[in-house]
Length: 209
Image 1 (tube, rainbow, N blue to C red):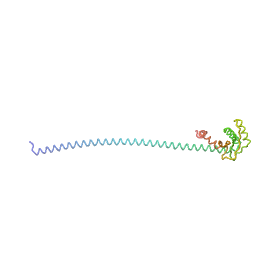
Image 2 (image 1 turned 90 degrees about the vertical axis):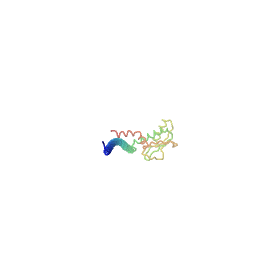
Image 3 (image 1 turned 180 degrees about the vertical axis):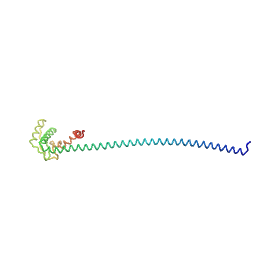
Image 4 (image 1 turned 30 degrees about the vertical axis):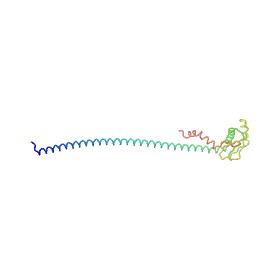
């Protein structure tokens, strides 16, 4: 038979054992929860890291592609500017060549053709032609051209040299009697008009491989 002391010892031991078991269970559960939370945290960090890496890669790719596009535009602009510079240089060279031609008989023929075609374009009538200080065109030549235009158009035509001289390399400016119609066929104007027409041909000659 258990004594009172033995009974108390038994109860105390049981309480201690139950407490130890409960403590062990709590610790075990806490450890399990900790490991679970740690795993979730690690997985979450890994996912965020992967997302950040992918976003960084995507952003870097976009930046690189944008820089490549900007560089391509910049380089193309430089190339186009340089081509334009060379084309303009070619026209300037042509202009210099024309300066030598106006001192030859070819220019005299060009001038007569310019007067004839311009007078005909203007429909004949009482016309005045203006030239630069260096250009000499005889009244007899103008009369022959006027007679030819009169025959072809059936409109009485006269052509005279204007007193005012124009500032141009060569060519003519022609006006009607009232001065309200003017046709500019100076060499400078003809070259400017020709630029748009022959620019592509000049570019092809300069830059074809």
